[in-house]
Image 1: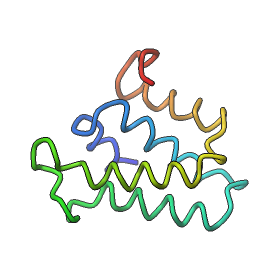
Image 2 (image 1 turned 180 degrees about the vertical axis):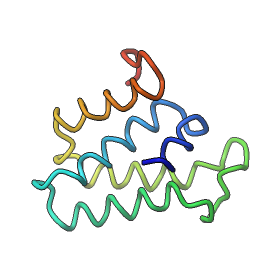
Image 3 (image 1 turned 180 degrees about the horizontal axis):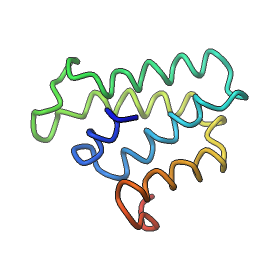
Image 4 (image 1 turned 45 degrees about the vertical axis):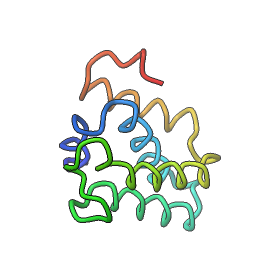
Length: 103
Protein backbone atom coordinates (compact mmCIF):
# COMPACT_ATOMS: atom_id res chain seq x y z
CA UNK A 1 0.00 0.00 0.00
CA UNK A 2 2.84 2.44 0.76
CA UNK A 3 4.31 2.09 -2.72
CA UNK A 4 0.89 2.65 -4.26
CA UNK A 5 0.45 5.81 -2.18
CA UNK A 6 3.74 7.16 -3.59
CA UNK A 7 2.53 6.50 -7.15
CA UNK A 8 -0.83 8.13 -6.48
CA UNK A 9 0.18 11.66 -7.38
CA UNK A 10 1.96 10.65 -10.60
CA UNK A 11 -0.83 8.43 -11.89
CA UNK A 12 -3.79 10.61 -10.97
CA UNK A 13 -6.87 10.00 -8.92
CA UNK A 14 -8.91 8.19 -11.57
CA UNK A 15 -6.22 5.61 -12.26
CA UNK A 16 -5.50 5.11 -8.57
CA UNK A 17 -9.19 4.56 -7.89
CA UNK A 18 -9.20 1.66 -10.37
CA UNK A 19 -5.97 0.29 -8.91
CA UNK A 20 -7.57 0.34 -5.47
CA UNK A 21 -10.61 -1.46 -6.83
CA UNK A 22 -8.31 -4.23 -8.02
CA UNK A 23 -6.35 -4.26 -4.77
CA UNK A 24 -9.43 -4.59 -2.59
CA UNK A 25 -11.02 -7.14 -4.95
CA UNK A 26 -7.89 -9.27 -4.54
CA UNK A 27 -8.22 -9.00 -0.75
CA UNK A 28 -11.79 -10.33 -0.86
CA UNK A 29 -11.92 -14.06 -0.02
CA UNK A 30 -14.76 -14.49 -2.54
CA UNK A 31 -12.43 -13.57 -5.41
CA UNK A 32 -11.15 -16.76 -7.06
CA UNK A 33 -7.45 -17.59 -7.09
CA UNK A 34 -7.05 -17.04 -10.86
CA UNK A 35 -8.46 -13.50 -10.52
CA UNK A 36 -6.27 -12.70 -7.51
CA UNK A 37 -3.21 -13.94 -9.41
CA UNK A 38 -4.04 -11.73 -12.40
CA UNK A 39 -4.71 -8.74 -10.16
CA UNK A 40 -1.50 -9.11 -8.17
CA UNK A 41 0.47 -9.46 -11.39
CA UNK A 42 -1.01 -6.25 -12.80
CA UNK A 43 -0.55 -4.35 -9.54
CA UNK A 44 3.05 -5.53 -9.29
CA UNK A 45 3.73 -4.31 -12.80
CA UNK A 46 2.12 -0.98 -11.95
CA UNK A 47 4.29 -0.29 -8.91
CA UNK A 48 7.61 -1.71 -10.12
CA UNK A 49 9.95 0.96 -11.47
CA UNK A 50 11.30 -1.28 -14.24
CA UNK A 51 8.86 -2.12 -17.00
CA UNK A 52 8.50 -2.01 -20.78
CA UNK A 53 8.08 1.78 -20.93
CA UNK A 54 9.66 3.67 -17.99
CA UNK A 55 7.05 5.57 -15.98
CA UNK A 56 9.04 8.82 -15.91
CA UNK A 57 8.61 9.40 -19.69
CA UNK A 58 5.99 12.18 -19.99
CA UNK A 59 2.80 11.27 -21.82
CA UNK A 60 3.58 7.60 -22.42
CA UNK A 61 5.24 6.39 -19.25
CA UNK A 62 2.12 4.95 -17.70
CA UNK A 63 0.64 3.77 -21.03
CA UNK A 64 1.77 0.17 -20.73
CA UNK A 65 0.76 0.10 -17.07
CA UNK A 66 -2.71 1.42 -17.94
CA UNK A 67 -3.27 -1.08 -20.73
CA UNK A 68 -2.46 -3.96 -18.38
CA UNK A 69 -4.70 -2.50 -15.66
CA UNK A 70 -7.60 -2.08 -18.12
CA UNK A 71 -7.24 -5.65 -19.35
CA UNK A 72 -7.12 -6.99 -15.81
CA UNK A 73 -10.10 -4.85 -14.82
CA UNK A 74 -12.11 -6.24 -17.74
CA UNK A 75 -11.23 -9.83 -16.83
CA UNK A 76 -12.03 -9.45 -13.13
CA UNK A 77 -14.88 -6.91 -13.20
CA UNK A 78 -17.34 -9.29 -11.56
CA UNK A 79 -15.27 -9.18 -8.37
CA UNK A 80 -15.25 -5.38 -8.07
CA UNK A 81 -18.26 -5.19 -5.78
CA UNK A 82 -19.90 -2.19 -4.13
CA UNK A 83 -18.01 -3.08 -0.92
CA UNK A 84 -14.71 -3.02 -2.83
CA UNK A 85 -15.56 0.38 -4.30
CA UNK A 86 -16.49 1.74 -0.86
CA UNK A 87 -13.13 0.67 0.57
CA UNK A 88 -11.38 2.32 -2.36
CA UNK A 89 -13.34 5.56 -1.81
CA UNK A 90 -12.28 5.59 1.85
CA UNK A 91 -8.63 5.19 0.95
CA UNK A 92 -8.93 7.82 -1.79
CA UNK A 93 -10.45 10.27 0.70
CA UNK A 94 -7.46 9.78 2.96
CA UNK A 95 -5.00 10.37 0.11
CA UNK A 96 -6.77 13.03 -1.98
CA UNK A 97 -9.49 14.50 0.23
CA UNK A 98 -12.93 14.85 -1.35
CA UNK A 99 -13.13 12.41 -4.27
CA UNK A 100 -16.83 12.52 -5.02
CA UNK A 101 -16.15 13.86 -8.50
CA UNK A 102 -13.80 11.02 -9.46
CA UNK A 103 -15.25 8.48 -11.89
